[in-house]
Length: 258
Image (cartoon, rainbow, N blue to C red):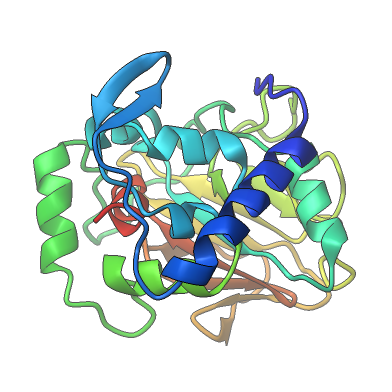
């Protein structure tokens, strides 16, 4: 469970820091060379602070300051759901911060692997090669594109895990407006139970719409209700009018480091 004393204070601190730096450095990454502090220890690293100022919650930003292997070791088992925040709908951000799951529980597999290749790659060097070789395609977001998106908008980052106190549907990560969902989207266009994610035994991730009023969209195509569709890192999602991107832990780490 995240024990941060005051998420609102964390946001204000990040915002003040961002405003101090952005006037001189908005067009170029701000680099912090030398010592980074993580868990009380100094370690080398270079991180783009303009980009991390556009990410919440604060715990994820702190984790991104760690070496790549540490971040992937902590979050490499789950895709990261990057939810685009909307300035005109502040309840969306408040709801996410109230219910965020930077820790959470890993989701047990519930889907039998299909006849296509799905694999969870936990080797850091292989993940790097995958990112470098990904030529993209319709709906695929490469690390450079992800970096541009984070520079342009603010995002809430949530690993696709269960909230530890939610005992219902242990094999699903639920998304919806209701406060008891794993990913809480407090937005009028989002249904109480809008969609859910499931995993197969190889780490493949699937999404299904829960007969929502305004639909769940994958790469601009509306998903049929209650049918699982395989999801790949880098694809675009929309829950009603709330936009999101799914990415690997490795892609996110590379996006904020130069």
